[in-house]
Image 1 (spheres, helix red, strand yellow):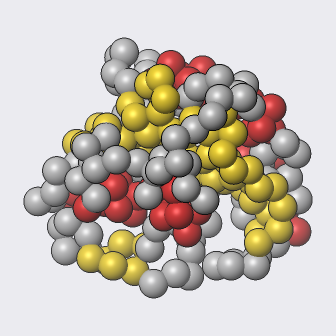
Image 2 (cartoon, one colour; image 1 turned 180 degrees about the vertical axis):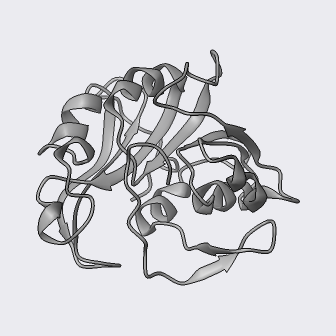
Length: 201
């Protein structure tokens, strides 16, 4: 994954990408909540890296935009429907203008100045799926810089004014020992009652 966020290689099985390359398997957290995204939805994979989540949603029939600063990642999306945007998310303007998405996915990446842009890009009723490293991860490996590690409850404090569907903050042993924080929120009022299908646990 490019940008200031640090990518920790995952020891999960790989699968075939659009260009024939082997791609690291999707995060189980993202796979779990992908079922809440309709096949026709517009999905943004932010700081997409090799494209494992963009390809997951494209295979489900979603209209996917994938953004990363490394232009070579476009090769992962050859012969797929994924729209790739090469952009430096940290040193240039937001590259997506006023586009809005039904779901936004971010994993293993943290650049806090992007939080307001993510909010603006999330359509009403849209789903944010976020997972990255948290404070205490230095005991297990990279990243160790506090700038790249979420503070306790940080995602909940940042996005908790939306409807929180799931939140976890702590140690995971799989696929590698790490401290992680992850959240799923829907862009609606915090106490709203959700339809049964989109919020299946």
